[in-house]
Length: 304
Image 1 (cartoon, rainbow, N blue to C red):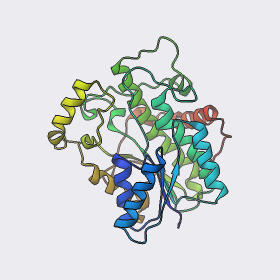
Image 2 (tube, rainbow, N blue to C red):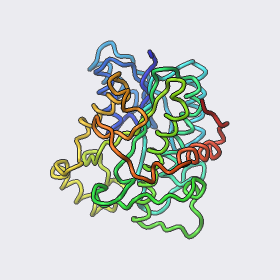
Image 3 (cartoon, rainbow, N blue to C red):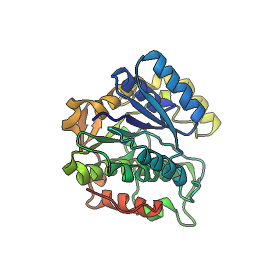
Image 4 (tube, rainbow, N blue to C red):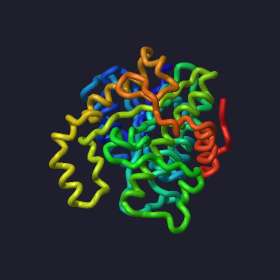
């Protein structure tokens, strides 16, 4: 495949570091960003540091379905077909329930719904050798490996996108929404791989590990943010914690390297397959997420 590697959320944290790693390998890039000026500035630094690399920038807010539709329409109209899509954009909202411009719970809208709205039309144009990588997390299973996060609590896509009145809005509930979105990202990778591998399009979910350097606590109260920042130099040495640059190199490899093909259809940490939770393998879960998001986004059902 000769198309670009499309990375959402490409101007900060893991997305930015992954773009640098992909550029070093010589692959053309398509950076999907919310702030176009910031995206163009980053693209210039990539071109300066890697002469000859092709980098294009498109604006889209994954939480805003009209923005995603405009991005997709432009790509299809201009016949831009990615060789890989890295679904990196995401957020964690812990201070009450926040809403997307379309009236959906913001965590699920950004981390899951927006990516399905992006992928569904594009997958129809992607060919053999193409890949999709979603971003999972050990938070989906809870327990010691989840660094104190509560496990995902799956209900159904409609209720998760539009929590009913009386839904808890405290910090613990916000963390559950985040871990549940990560469960959905993992199940989506399994579903996409099952639906499209007959056409040679493969998918995997990637666990980048705990990355203290990315500022995971930025949505927390000021006292917690300050403590987290002070402890970051120590947190990177915890078991399961990783430096952003290390995770980015592995993510870029998973999205582009021929050697990563045996890992498609799996949940991947570093460069090894690992088991995700039993909940992520529940029969029909991936289909329910995919089809529920298509309905919420107003996208016609698709599939190989």
